[in-house]
Structures are given as structure tokens and as C-alpha cells.
Image (cartoon, rainbow, N blue to C red; front, side, top):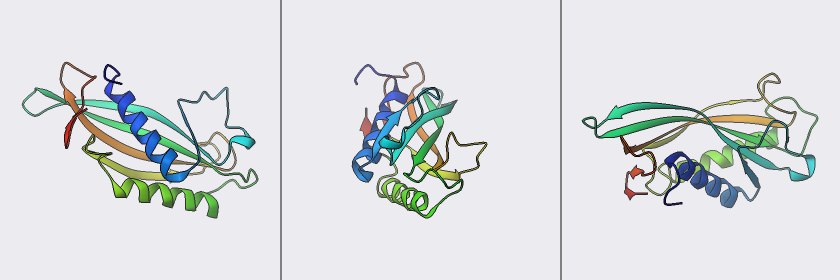
Length: 153
């Protein structure tokens, strides 16, 4: 993990948060060619969909503003909206994030933005996508070291 890119470290920390806190299967960078199967549900798929880089702190640091999608999958494959079960999963995810918005001091912020279950936006019935903004700092010329709110990661 020491030489991994910062975004990999952040993704692994978020994966651990949800896997341990929700007790469900959590998949990272799952291919659209390999959809979440019925027997794997309830589950979550995590992926970073965008990173915006901004020089910060007198040009010595780089702010990474990342958009993450957290796809929640329930067991019911018949409903095409945010069901009661998906709402419970989203609420539990929110509670986990709210308990530690810096993921142990690694991040600057972890804010939930939207949830959608629109059929043209989700990969499957019984899925809701929770979008979050996650920000962290690295040295400007080193994307493997996170300058966290409580230390270096």
C-alpha cells in the first residue's frame, strides 16, 4: 500500500468502511461485462469516475477532488426505483460516512451528493447509485503520498 497511488489508498479505505460497516459484498472497479449477480446481493460496487486536480497551498500541494459512485444492490430485482431496502442501505452508508468524514484523517472531505435509481443511469433493477465528492491532498509532484488531515498516508 505504501507505493500505491493515493486514489487507490482512498478507494481501499472506503471499501473497508462499507464492507465492515454494512456487512455486504463490496466490489471495486467491477466491469460492466461482469454484472453483480443475484447470489452476490446485497452488495455495493465502488468506482471513481472523475478526479479534478487543483494546485493548492502555495503550489506545493495538489488538491484531488474526486467523484465516486457507490452502487447499492438489493436482492429485489423487480423494482426500478429507490425502494425501502435501498433507502435503508443509503441511510446506513450515510451514517458510516458521517461517523468519520476524513476516513481516519486521510481526507479533507467526504460528502454525499446524490442518489439515483433512474433506469437509464443504473446498471440493473434493484440498484441505486449514491454519488459522493471526496477530496484529499498530495504533494504536487507525488501522487502516492496523501497529506491527510491527521498525518501522512
